[in-house]
Length: 481
Image 1 (cartoon, rainbow, N blue to C red):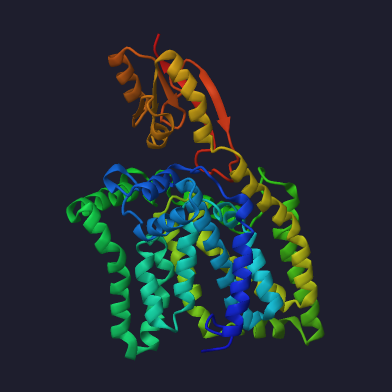
Image 2: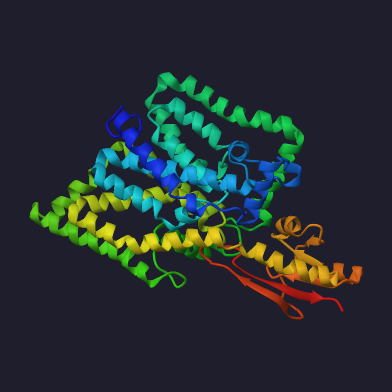
């Protein structure tokens, strides 16, 4: 195997040590509460897997749930904490993979910068302890990509990925194809490995859920994702809105660029790092015989080994733009954080020690910002939970109903046995109130909640960066005596 690949024993030891350190660094930021509706479903799925009840939502993510169950039994405590610990382990694994990939071509200092830059990506800092499939899925996907020269393992991991986070699978497709072409003698083994990986999670899931029920639930969920929920290119925002969301997500969540809700010191990170790299690169190139020759040589430096990675990243970026909820969930861009880290480390290493030192110094504001985001998530209740705590007393005192849309399922478990209705819009909630004769409160995320409202009872606002979709919520009095 080529030098610098994850199979090198010495390199593997360095990467493992760095990964353990990175995972351990997440310990102060572990969370005890689900942070969003999907996280609440996953936590309940760990406690009791039941797709028909939405524990979790289809297709069930059985590989993820199984890993979460194993950690839950090992650690005890609430299921959400076990899923948080699983994300922390995946955080360490992904940092180790970033280091291993960069070590052979950039040296130890360049590889450490790549790992450091990846770990400090704001989306990595937030999701490094969030109980979602994003980080475990990204780590497994990149492990498969980097093992493309061992196609059996690549195809096996791809099969498991479908049971952990299928939406990240486009990242792996070029690696599967490259391994298939490079090793024709192993094609039978590749197909078998893929089958083993898929069967390992699909057969138990079908046995627990029932084949007909599973297919029906998966179809309804897929139809909602690509149709009714409007989270794809066919949604209301269209191409201009999605391009804006893509640029904003890459700039703020992946690259850690400054914006109005974060510290202005971040202007020292993204633009400052770019300027430092260009100046150091230019100075070194001038000493070595001209900028044009230096740029030409550097452009030719990446080997053909990078092709599956670059193609996979490009394919995944296209899939996210076309088929994922970019406007409300920029976390879908998380698997691209390693690419940004590799690119920065490659550019800085071409500028030599001055560029590496400058980028490292400029990364300190980014480290502080990432620390603040992770600490906020660990210490503060998610806005939906905070709103539920406020609503509990109001509903109990007045005997009122609470109506919500996407938060209804989560609030129903938070407020049990208080009545929580799931509605599509405010008109439906008011019609239900008229029939029951009871006062109704609406969560402000319900469409039309403020039309004809009689004021609000409480207003909860969280960090927009940490809770990107449901960070600003009100309990609205919609009707009643």
